[in-house]
Image 1 (cartoon, rainbow, N blue to C red):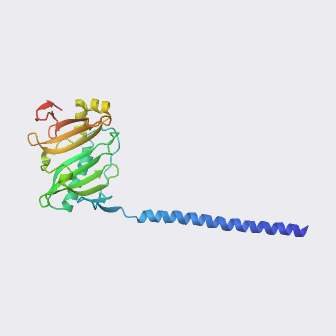
Image 2 (image 1 turned 180 degrees about the vertical axis):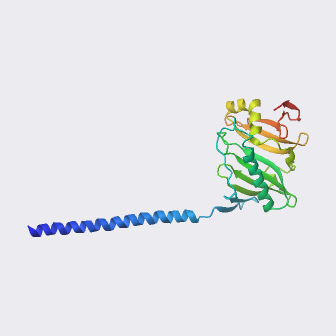
Image 3 (image 1 turned 45 degrees about the horizontal axis):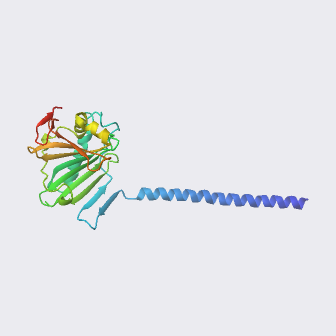
Length: 252
């Protein structure tokens, strides 16, 4: 009977040693995998360079804007465009700074805004387009994601993007920011068109015809009917809604 008892005791001790041994190794392995994964993410580069070998376009991306532009989400349809003006100006100032460091002769020629599909603030995409006096065949673009606050630079042949007729923007006439321009378009006829056609909205700030003035062109593109587009032209200096000849249709 003592021999049977001793056998059970020895067997129990062996099983405990096995359990302890494999348990420690499992925990250690799990920790090492987690730790290595963490180190891998920490050491990964946040700055990337991409070039399309089949195109003359070049793109550079950078996650560091050198400043944090804070913006809480709300609906663009009734957002405080005055209060958000400082935030929007920060993107313009940052783009001008990047452009000056990129190439000294860059001149801003267009700003295109792609609004979030849910029309939330802080989620639009802003693309600043610059012309170069020494490299006249290409546009130099700086695109910001308001959501991630990262930017991407690109050099694009003019024939591939926006054409070659853009004129330099006269910044002294830029008084209406894109949120205010969108709200003016919405109050005119834009909201009814957008709701009826489930339209996506973009805006373009450009200097040119009619009258050579600075204009916001607000474009509503239907997602239900191909080719169905509605545009509203807004004087970027006064906020007046104008027709294709520049005549005032509606005061702000």
